[in-house]
Image (cartoon, rainbow, N blue to C red; front, top):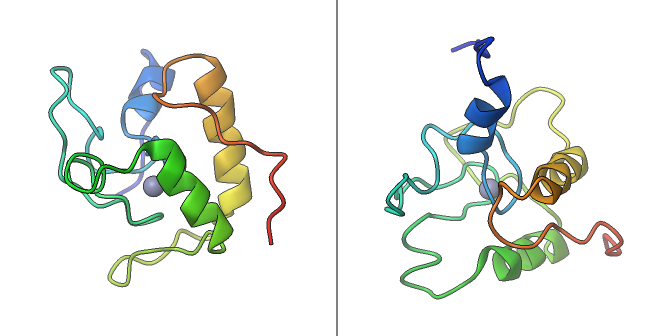
Length: 116
Ligand SMILES: [Zn+2]
């Protein structure tokens, strides 16, 4: 399904469906709805499941992101293919940009990390 950013508030729309962990911006629904309810969706990119990884397992976005980065930023989903030209570092950079606009929960990713 091609993404059609609406001319009205295209940024907000993008933000809502952006994974707060890895910055993947094509989640089926926002990680959390307006009342804070988790989507239960598993991010195909980093594998974080909203409402489970955080609420049940007690991991924060920051902790999980760190883990994801240190394990090589691998595409998590087996059933959903990674997008063409997918670049996890670019994606994290975009997330950092969004986070500095204070609309993404959690601290921005530390881009000075050594990717090893
Ligand atoms: Zn993710």
